[in-house]
Length: 256
View 1 (cartoon, one colour):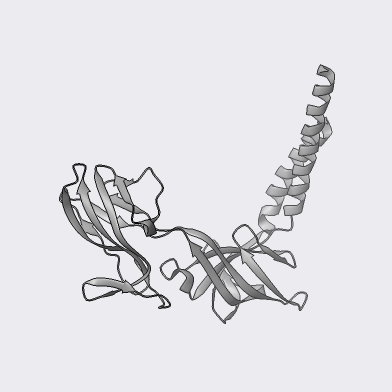
View 2 (cartoon, helix red, strand yellow; view 1 turned 135 degrees about the vertical axis):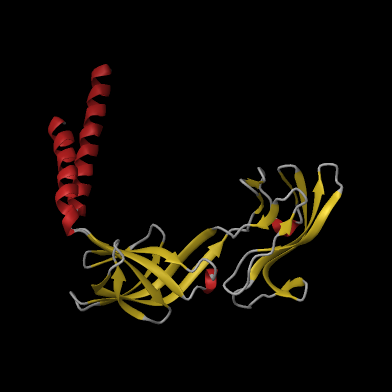
């Protein structure tokens, strides 16, 4: 047990220290339909890689956007709500009544219209704003920013802004084709957050996308990493886990 714990710890530290110079890492920005053989390292220098990535498709799913009041700090509701159910949302000292919610909207003249199927559309809500005594303060449209339009917000009488925050991603991932110079192979894979793809020792991670374009993002960002000492670090962790497990089992047996 002593050997497993201490050797495992030494192996993790030694592999991490000596393996640092051998680690290769870069970020690749790949447009739809393009084949890219290069990326930028942590110093921003463009480097050629032994693998290439072709972006076949990118998919993203989002949660509903949240209402918020912005000033020196951000105020949001303490309760969950569904914008499509026309909720009354209490934010700090005001009540926001959602009259209409359009998950795909486009601004025309002075209002938003339904824009299902239109690229780069935004989320939009028509709201009425009341104080706690239900006296109407103001009303109007709120929307999230997109690739082609700015966000709409409402200025409150106290100088703060009522906004619709950009929706947080629920899921995003890419269908890719990976080409390798080393093995001269071509692989098709689906890369998702926390679900990388491995080829010839290179780990391909989903990294980024165009936040303003959302599901219509024209590119996908990947972080590619090759660390030949990584398996030694994992093996060190396994040894420590076995050592600690045996120690706990032995102590439990002695207690009984």
